[in-house]
Image (cartoon, rainbow, N blue to C red; front, side, top):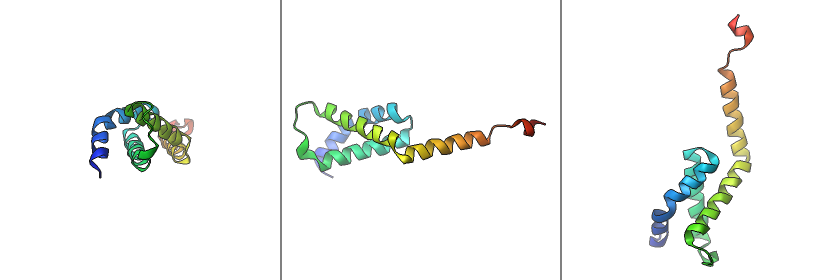
Length: 97
């Protein structure tokens, strides 16, 4: 890993993690999103035109990646399985009789 990327992750990683968590409400998924953010940043270093701060640029990528996750089938499946699991724990009227 390059020293530059390491320094950027050290400086902005925690903030990006909190931003991702605000969207997805799951720390594990937020960590995956932040990994994707820094991978995308590293692959596209030459596209950062410095018209804004690096923090602003990384947060924008984080927001886009969070939105992508929320629109994805992976998220919908996760939510559906969670609802099914919650529904399985509820007692039906027949069960209480």
